[in-house]
Length: 309
Image 1 (cartoon, rainbow, N blue to C red):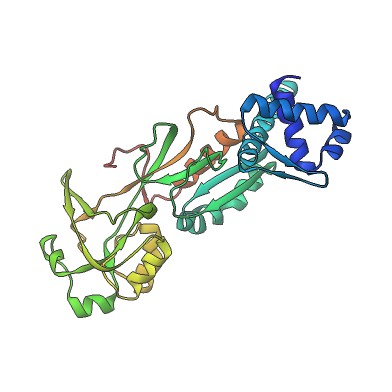
Image 2: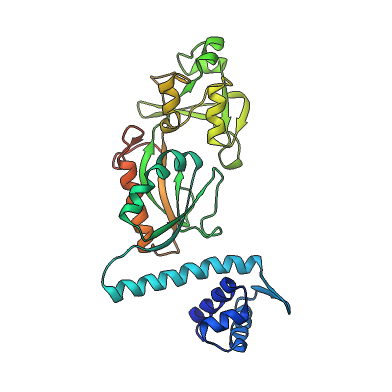
């Protein structure tokens, strides 16, 4: 039995949660299924499944291997279907990750149009502001905000997110409004700890030059919605992306300051693993996301335009 067939047997055992049922579904002797799994474990050098007389349970290594096997088998099936039918039909499951605010405010509200155009793609979307390992977590692709530093990923830049410096009217009434970067020394900020790391300095751009300012604050958070809430509640100046702050600026809950000093914009990419050839599903979703962001010029600098990153 070749390696791909062994993967198919393994995934069927996990899906059925039984060697016997998997054997029945595959029309194979149960002993052959057992031998296949044993040989696969020996080849990999890890235990994939714990077995007792009454039940089976998948090991952590087995769970990770299962995710990879499932994607490989799906890609093979998709490739076969493409050549058999002679048409590029985007179908199957796609696991995608993005930040909470990006998903809730921009991507998810537009999903109806995606599914109208691609009804055979099933999306499994994870939302969080933490840094994730695309390969380790079994993701097909993700939308990442900020510089692309991981050399194992291929990134397609789809735009640059505009940012705005702002504060609640209550805060400005108590502390005054800063009129230049030097005056920021008399103010405090809500600091954002990206991906659980240290709070980053504020960076402004003007005439092609960067100006870095270390901001003092009494609170720091690692969640974009909490960051906005802290700003609205008057805990300090904040520097969110424009799309996150737009509704609060329109309602008057936040007011823009330092309008002559532009916060450094944030590049936004859709990325997938360099080791994984992008399937039709991935390419389709990447193209759709790029098109979606092209339709939001009020929040982005175009991907076709150079920008500091």
